[in-house]
Image: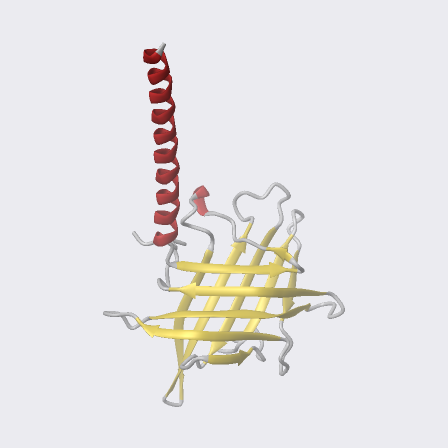
Length: 208
């Protein structure tokens, strides 16, 4: 009787240890995955979470890019930072696809940037949202020119050792208006971004 009792107790303890070990492994794997993520992009569209779709279903490759570029005019170099994000390009069941582009200009400092330009001009500050339906019809929404309908807050700009690029972190929010019908609009809120690995056009957001 005692032998059976000890055997049951021993098996119970072993099972508990195995479950605890498995739980720790899963927690460590989750932490490892979180530690590997270098770039972050989140936002809400009309109060709903809007997420870029995954490239090849790879959780490290959501379809968004943050990239530095520059334009030189009259000897002055204008530093631009552009965020581009795509949703439902490869795995949409409805055939709908979204394309968001946000660009800030003269990015040399922390602070607030108002997007008051037009997206037709590559050196302007703007936000533009394109929605293409299953019928291949594209509707374009953009921030209003010469107003503060859309803003970006830059919280950090940090040089990357051995590179001309810089890390950048911040947030954004605002309203974009349908170009052919300004009474129709989309509200973008709770936008956040952090790019420790900018200019990665393969959508690789994790450390490799």
